[in-house]
Length: 386
Ligand SMILES: Cc1ncc(COP(=O)(O)O)c(C=O)c1O
Image (cartoon, rainbow, N blue to C red; front, side, top):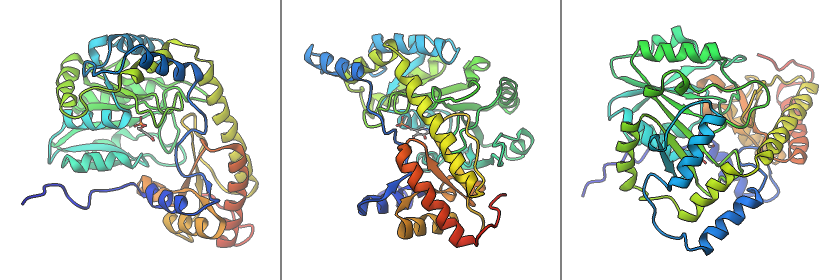
């Protein structure tokens, strides 16, 4: 009997810490990107009402028209892009959207450029499709793509570049000029852009630009309700792209998830068309936590990133320990869980990622313990900067 999947597909380096944190009571959890808010009440009510009204059936694979119309309006309002209902596929979260996008643009043996540091979960999806992930460096402290260096990574097998703005774990935005330059670069190399925009509405300063503004025909956009509406466990997102791509990926989705939960789609429409002040409130809370966390770590001379959005902060931990050992020992000795930088790629090896989606109370206590631990590891007073 044959089993064709590689038993050693990559898993996320955050999971190792997460699993250990879950196994021990009383751990301060700063390792995962899980908002500590509840979904908005009116969204919850819309779910219940839809179910009570009998919307408990299979739907069209691409999603109900009500939701796709609301998504099209949101893409116009928030992302400044034009996508019709026929250029949208409703997905069970951002992750399946990414997987379908990878599948659409590349086949086994092809290559896709991924950010380093970048979200580790891209790697499992790519590897399971036999697609080679080629990391492109986002260098601290700016964390911006260097197009000349990226050109050197392009081969005849390169099919796409993954762009994640604002990014996990860097939180950085690209300016309009930088986004346009990246679009021109993708055209010059004839590449798709897989634009992971799941944090598009968590922005503290500045604004995000979608490549679909300039190159809609070569952009597949991945969006999610998970972070914007604190709905991680509900599993709702959407994929956008040119109509032919969405039509063909809808056929794949038909054979994978058939359709997304019907009452959930009604709830999604309510989230998009209802009051948005809740999104702003959560965003301001993440911003306050960013400022608070930077302030705490500054006091201990620990260098940090300066995220423009998303809800992560990178803290420089120096070179005395690998980031994995740092995270494991911090958990063991201080009861604080953080994500090791190495989980996000070689560029973040001397950093750990702190999730600002955790409460202020946990950040206060957890970061004080982290600083104490770093002090023990490195000796008093030594500057912990790059
Ligand atoms: C960069 C990035 N993309 C995509 C996702 C997927 O989110 P979801 O599948 O919950 O929509 C996440 C979740 O952490 C993420 O950080």
